Image 1 (spheres, one colour):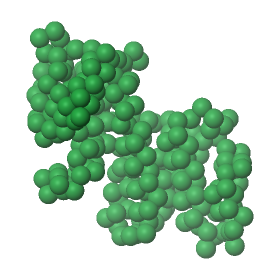
Image 2 (cartoon, rainbow, N blue to C red; image 1 turned 45 degrees about the vertical axis):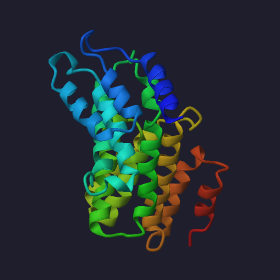
Image 3 (cartoon, rainbow, N blue to C red; image 1 turned 135 degrees about the horizontal axis):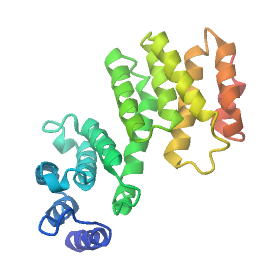
Length: 245
């Protein structure tokens, strides 16, 4: 059954992949990734990255991101790949920067990238529970990574701003907040946003407001009111707004 699924997956990918050159296709990468041989997949992808004719091709970076993301979800790899998630996001960013408007890898990208981004957003949601400086800094680095390959997403900036505040970097937090809010105010609705964009924006607003909720409730309220036009009817958002002191 596993073999059947792997072969089917490869056939689907072959229908979308454009090779960087005829004698250097990505057949080996596709087979290794589909079979779950992530370590060798990463080694092969690295070799492709060094080839001049593949230097501007996003696929080796994209498949590396997918492989690292899969590794990050499997505890068996924890010792050998402790920073797998970091590299998953990093390689996704590089792939995005190299991606062409007519990219043939959209289907492959959509097979894992939304889950990767959503995972980072959910990590940011719960990281505040630990609240140690190392964890806060890791979230900021992750938001910077995500912002690099989606610079028009205001949510990543607002999440970063909230965590900068908790690290007592008020100047940096204020600058990041202004950039995020400027992007948000350029929106008319969240209707055409990807789910990850909508979730990150709401979380960013909630986290920014939460930082001020106890000492400056009026500031927290103003933040939520400013974003209310995008989240009217959202139960979580309205609950936060209506339950400020």
